Length: 168
Image 1 (cartoon, rainbow, N blue to C red):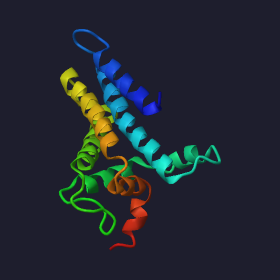
Image 2 (cartoon, rainbow, N blue to C red):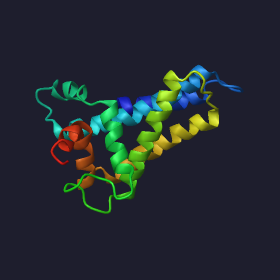
Image 3 (spheres, one colour):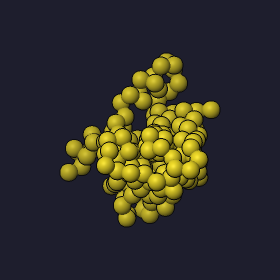
Image 4 (cartoon, rainbow, N blue to C red):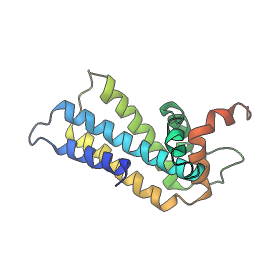
């Protein structure tokens, strides 16, 4: 099994770990694991699209070049109505791609709250919703991952900031 699937399984486990009133630590870690599940799925897909398998460590090294902030910026761009990258994506964007991008932004914001905002209290139903949204986004990805717009999306996760400085 891949890391992103393992993280999703862990998020599910943590969301339901305690019967009755769950511990905040379990719920917070479930939110974080759900986010990282989607993040690592996209990194896996991007590195397999953009980098050859040889040398064997190239993809692992390339994964380290992706950043959470740039991924969020790209996802905000693709989540907007008529989003995408000018001159590279075709309109209309696949609805599933926009929804995946919106889910990523929502999960990243939830993970920030879960990891850093101790005033935030999480409820199991809310956390299960994040886990379900992650699972749905991963399923949607399977339906669109071979589309040209998906290729642009994956490439943008790595180079979007560099593209932007030339398209102003």
